[in-house]
Structure formats: C-alpha cells, structure tokens
Length: 109
Image (cartoon, rainbow, N blue to C red):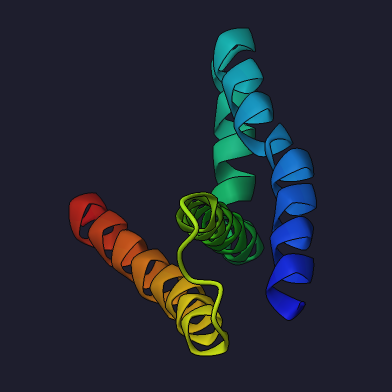
C-alpha cells in the first residue's frame, strides 16, 4: 500500500516538476540573461536539492513502472515477492539517483 502511495506522489511531483526543464528551455530560448538567471537558480544549493529530488522521483517512478510491468506478466504477487520488489524499488531508486549525481559531479568537474 505504501509503495502505491509513493508511486502516486512521485507521479504528481513529476507532473509539476516538469515545469523545471520547460522554464530552463524557455529561458535558453529567450535571452542569455534569462538563461543565466535560471541556471543560477537551479545551480544554487536549493535548486540542486530540488533537482536531486526531481531526479529521485523520476527514477523511483520509473522503477515502480517496471514493478507493475512484472506484475502484468503475473509474477511477483506473493507476499515475499512483493516485499522484495518494494525494497528493490526503494533501494534501486536511491542507489541510481546517487550514482547519477556522482556521474554528474565527475563530468562537471
């Protein structure tokens, strides 16, 4: 039940969070000053926390979709399998998000 709630919450967060890349692209298309302003906001500590949360929500929601895809094939309905899939979704989303941000930090320098 909790995983269903978190999946819905991440879906709503992604719905509203999609405004972030839209604003960034609009700023890039409008002027160098607007682009610099948006980059400054998203590059600040609060912006990075928001982007980190957005990337976690995206990865968690995607892994939740994979979990549902497994269920569509009739697998993973037992109590132990459900627990394993829930833990894999949570753990996988955290690990993949951290790895993503490590790669970003390494590439960025």
